[in-house]
Image: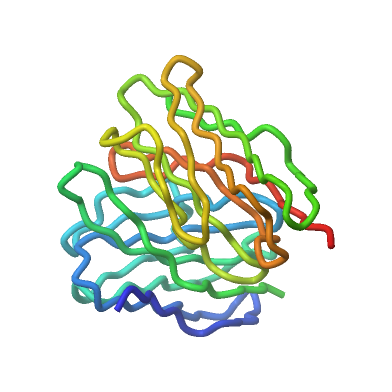
Length: 115
Length: 111
């Protein structure tokens, strides 16, 4: 199983709402990632969890709050977002390979619209 | 600093023609390089990766890429384009468990 799943596929939320994005993988990977992708742009790394601990935060605003409840699940909690936060949010998982590189597998994404 | 440059934001080829998507990198250490494909409104799919084992890397869907250190390039090729290859392609460099992406190249395949 090389699949990363994300729910929901689409989300519309107001600026005062609280919502969460969910990501799941069953490949036994020990690293999980959140990316943000604006239209016509490449993905931008937001957070990296390694062995369920936050290892990288790319200076993301606190209105985005990641959580890794266990090695298979990754959440992104959203609160008081701005319209400019509307984007495709991609989750990925990966492992350190014998060649010392991380090979990342991406989910289909959640299309977020902030109104 | 680590960076990736993809030459050509749009490439158009005829069905059956050679596909060549260009990628140049800058890295202070031996790089790990990847090509990903993204279809509209979908996530990214790994096509292939280079990790120093071989300079010519074969991937899925008939794609391959050649690592040239002297040219700091990792261009993606496919001998014969198919309509289903129309998508956006990203070259990426990995360091410290981070992926640095190029700006992407949209491939259009004409019938």
